[in-house]
Image 1 (tube, helix red, strand yellow):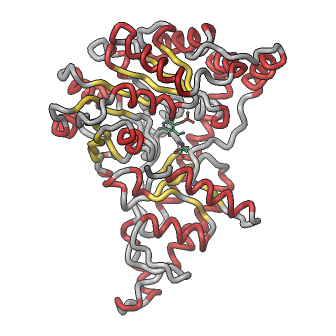
Image 2: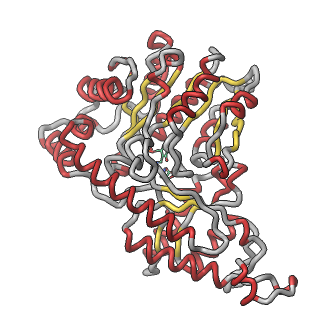
Length: 417
Ligand code: PMP
Ligand code: GLU
């Protein structure tokens, strides 16, 4: 299978930094903030109290209860702790949901609105499924429409994978639009929903008034066939802790039981002394820290959009959630970098940008067929880094020349861009 493009660029940028190169990293979807102190203290206290043995596979009662309570009260999802398992990151929750749902060799299809996170397609295919992309047009804010979802359905469709707020688009579906997509699923009782809500807390109503999160699992028509996935990585700045969770209240608890069985054969529980940290993260004591980080991401989203929009040849949309911008750069294709690289793809652009201007971005190709002309910027870094990095990107773009064979004049070309 393909390696993760996000992790690959992140690793290359880290290796360059280790050689002393001043790389500005926009590649990793990883908050630059530290985990809030109260959450760290909960884990330290658990460790010191000797919570060092195996925990139940799905997590202990306190953590599962805290998650179930959060899903009930904040998301309106009717569930109990039996429906919940704590996983080694949301990534592992996505993996297990797909492994549990897909029957290899049957041609099971999973509808994926794209551009979408790089890991979904490989994980669908690894489970033996077929990934059916539904391309969200940039002119429609990268959002798939109910009609597109309807048209993508076949008798082999078993699920749709939703992710709002979206990685890599940085958009949040308006609640009524998401509900309209769920209407289509509700009318097709054999289709399940996997709703990856890991960016739930990172939405920016101060940028677009009324922006709000809504969980498909709260809709009684589809509640028994919706798997809600979330985790601690993004909202609580806990990427390295590797904590996610999955909630599947339907099928009389059978689906959750199957996932937990799989987890018991793969990883068993997460580190036991992290379980009290889950409870602490979801407690009211952590809300102020989460809000502080959210507000910082909101102001970076505005800065990012302003600076990216000023780069010639970039077309971009205002992020309203998560911490990603996903500009379209295909106007630059055909040009040549100062280092002599022909920019014939997003991959070539990202490679040349990293090698020549020391700025790391993720090329669009692995986010979906429709994303080939895009690159992803994660703005989970300081405003100073954003300004420094985007000044380099702008200078790099302005330095691109028309290919010699086209007979163009470089100066004229870059002004025209
Ligand atoms: N879903 C989405 C949409 C993501 O961007 C990520 C990135 N980390 C994950 C899931 C997985 O997160 P983690 O495994 O760190 O919980
Ligand atoms: N999800 C983050 C990203 O898209 C972290 C890396 C990964 O797991 O893909 O950058």
